[in-house]
Every structure is written in structure tokens, then in C-alpha cells.
Image 1 (cartoon, rainbow, N blue to C red):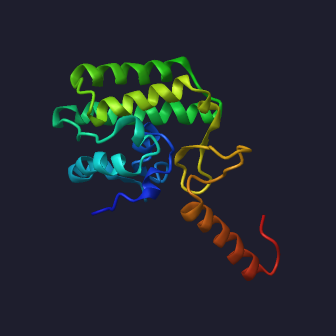
Image 2: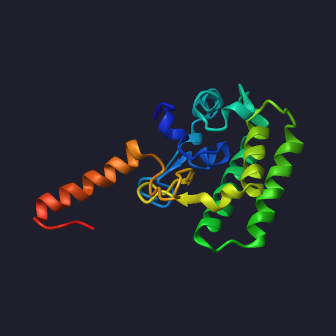
Length: 184
């Protein structure tokens, strides 16, 4: 299956979260899609991240991952998701942080190229760990993606208003119209 890397795919607000969000509908096994399962998509991701990621000014043009780093990179992606998802849900555990840091170190030892997607993803994850932004991490109420809420009053519910927000609003509108009542 071929995908397009559009700005919506970079709604996480941090490269590390965009990498974690490369698994669509992560918690719905029947519909879940790993966009990085296709090697071509994984190789196309750095160019799209260089154009659309909120952190693109920090990293510039990113090189694709080295083929030998693929499995380690995917392990890092899963460690990022587990750690930051637990942070948002209030179930964080030191072992999740240790796993994230261990995967990051292993990946950097394997491929230390500072211009590669690997180093940029590690850098992004470490920035999220060290900045006050981690209190702004949220999980999209529609698609389940992780994102940084940069709204003034920290009130975002969706990773991307133009996609998930509109879908949620349309669903509420449809429910109101079909039931004749209010949808909450």
C-alpha cells in the first residue's frame, strides 16, 4: 500500500512523536497499519520530515536510515511510544525511560551520523524528556496519536483540527441529526 507523507502525518509537534505515530490505529489490531513496514515509506520519511516536521529547523535535511539500523530504529520508535504514552496516562515507570534511553544509545552507537534520521529522532526524544513541553503531551481523542499541545490554554483534544477535529465534530453533528437530540 502506498501512502503520501502529508503535513497531517507530522501533527505530533516533535519528530520523535511523528516517528511513533507512523503506526496508524496502533491499538486496533484489525485496522492497524505500520507505515514503516514498507521499506520505501521508511526511506521517504526523512525527506518529508525535513519539509513538514515542527522541528525541521533543528535538523535540516535528514538522511534516510541506514538499512542496518532498521530494526534498532523500529525498537526506538516503540520505546518512544511506550514511554511518552505512559507519561500522558500517568503510568510512567523508570523502566520505560531506561528502555527508551537504552534504545537511543544503541541506535547512536550503531549509526552515529549526525545528519541521519536516527540521530535526529534520538535528539527529538531527548528534547521532549528535558523540556517543560512534556507536560503538554497528549493523546489524540480520535486517532490515538501522541502530540504536543502548543495551544495557549492547553485545550487541544486532537492532533490535527483539520483531520481528527473535523471528523469528531462531523460525528457529533451526525449523531445530533439522526437522534434528534444533543450529542456530548
